[in-house]
Image (cartoon, rainbow, N blue to C red; front, side, top):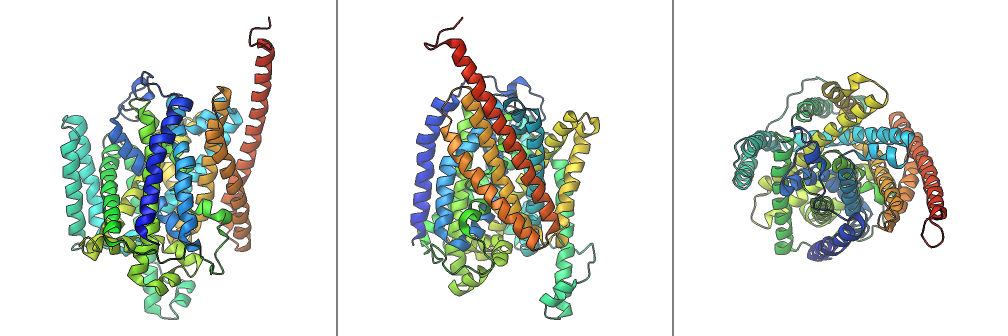
Length: 594
């Protein structure tokens, strides 16, 4: 299979979805109004509610939702073959994920910038709102823990990425100051920031930085066994554990401060700069595919799955947790982006368009791992890498980074620079997700504080501290951080569950106002069925493998899901009764019966 074919088919589908499907939805279902006063103007406070240029906001929204998930998920899912992964990414993005993101941003904008959890109260009921908030809390807990582990592992394996990643934060602060405090515009600072970032990437190969082992772990019995009794190798593995723990602690200390700063100072400019970096990266990968046309040598459908690999049905639909559809996107859209939307029509560009951008990233991940990485290591080594589910999961970012490195070499870029470039991409977007989701978790803790009358939880400093502490404990609680990727199946299931429930809320809202609801109802039914099935499979596996922490967390999420579905069913019955009463009151001809 030619990788050019995959790229062209994917991009053509996304372009058609934006030009045709999203335009019809915007006009006929969401009915976007250019004169509607958005929450960014209504409640402007200079911290969270800030009217924002749509291109700057697109950068924030896109990089916040993209993160590492649309890279990691497809890089794992190709273990089943590239065809199922590719079809789910393309069709799921156009007909489910982009519709979901657009809907969450629109409905939040129409309701004072409230989160999707808060909106549940008016649409389903008071109890449902609390259940939804707890579900969101659990999801954000796992998002932050998983992404912190991914970043820490990439710093360990790519020390040349340390300087460009942390240097980009300084660049972002300068860009934010120039744009919002000096009126310098956005074009020249953006170009200067991008050039500086690439200079830092080039510099990174000469200044690789490794974090010293500040913890001093000793080798575990498992590490000694894995090293075949070689105590030197076991000690090196323990040293890596100490470095990983150090990076995780540093990352969460950084996110504590980043998530309480005004959005204009760091969040927006950093995401805007990272957004440009991602566009350049996608353009380079696309150009490399067109120039080199590496064959997709991995199987279309893998008929020789390893013994520990689960069935692709339904696990494919939660392994690719982002890149097709993601509940986390709804949290960003209704949590931060809706508070910065300048005009309501911008919601189509930011919501639907942002999801298509993530889908494009997922397509490039499939190409990089099934064509580029296979060329880098050879077909036999590729099959060895995907010879077990554990190996495919742990090495997902490695496959992507090295795959992009090989593709970039086709454009004359040195492999060392290209791999640093790819690592910086993954780290930067995982870090932007960390910043945004910690901020969102602070909002959720504050809302729970209001619900239960706990004033301390409404303090943004205390709420942020609780969010950061909980995520850090979860990240570090699984084999000194090394086992963080074991959270991926549970994260994916919860993420897709939340997307299904968000579509449920939007569907009920559309039904209430007698608008066509099938656009959100069809993907909702599909997702809720698949995620419930996948959750049962995961819980049974956690029980058989004695994964007590994952079993408890997963069980709590499963109970919350079933409870919330019962609440939604009750809301549907009430809605049906109300509509019947309206019909009786109007009479058979639509006139008042009185």
